[in-house]
Length: 106
Image (cartoon, rainbow, N blue to C red):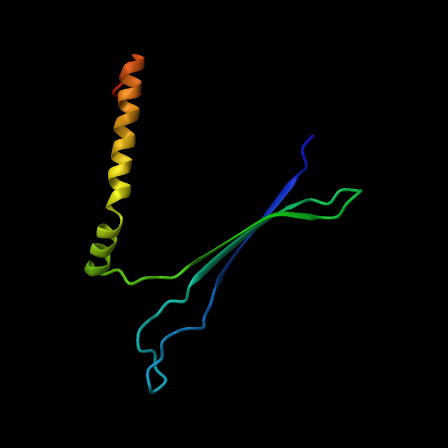
């Protein structure tokens, strides 16, 4: 039988790094980065204690959503959209060649 697995997830926000003006007031409502961490631990057995066997951490920094930032992302990442369209149509042709019947409403 497999070992039992316990998962714990933490979410943190870092309050440091907020922009302050010369008078001590916030110059802009800057949000702190979001940090997410998850750790998988095998439950202790009679022969051994808890064992950490997987840990992942993701840190995201917020970015202001403006028309200029959206345009910048659209210019930087059009390849992914094109690649996705090619892959979808490749799979459609592959299924057509195999003779799979199209069902409009499953």
